[in-house]
Image 1: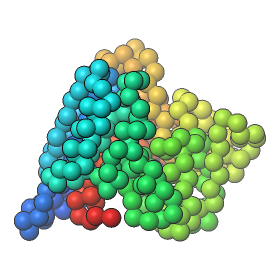
Image 2 (image 1 turned 120 degrees about the horizontal axis):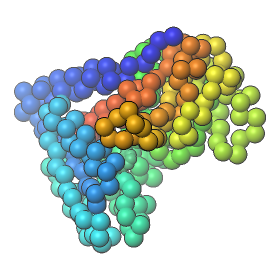
Image 3 (image 1 turned 90 degrees about the horizontal axis):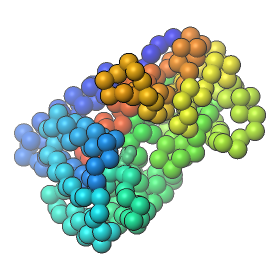
Image 4 (image 1 turned 135 degrees about the horizontal axis):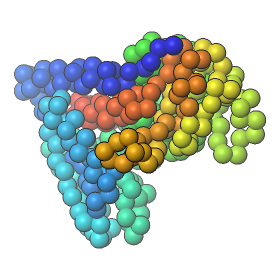
Length: 291
Ligand code: GUN
């Protein structure tokens, strides 16, 4: 069994991005500039956005954080999105989700110019990705594919089972795994809460991508000997072992599943660290090419 070290790969990719930025500076080209809009004071969102800003610093990007209180109006937020769409200094930007209930997340996402939508949430990017056109792919699916690529894990012709059908992980990762490419060319099945015979289907998989958000859902009896297991779960569960009072739990019962795997991602330190790297890669792409 080989552990997929997401933290180590994320550091390698960050170093590659930093080198590209250094070369761009040397050639007098524009330094990538990411903006993030953060509404309110949700603990998780504060942490994620702080990590994104710090990652920009690490690779030499410029970043701008725009903060609003939770009572900001939808109109005000949409006006800021419009301003960023038209600001030639900003190459890409994100609106951290979730937003307060009085604001339509879909309306805000659709207001973002898809050419600056480095989260890959805009329907134009989702549609373009699904037919293989250049696009911004959302961070978690892109991070998973990067891990498969860096570990040279074969995917062509393999049976890949995705558990979970969310718009930001399950659906896009299923689409990417079936595209005519590497990683890709897999035979993909998507399982979800209404799937019958789930265990039977999952136990035939060469590659399992668990993205349902149910701690320790995937047990050893569902996993074929030699399978590749990618754990996307990041549920916060109460813990007396940590200072914060919680720890992250994946969707995989790691201790019993790991011995059966050829490769497996841990939680934390697997897929998680790759998501911010994907955002950085998208921002660099937004700076380099316009599609
Ligand atoms: N909230 C949780 N994950 C994400 C993400 O990838 N992007 C944004 N904008 N908000 C999030």
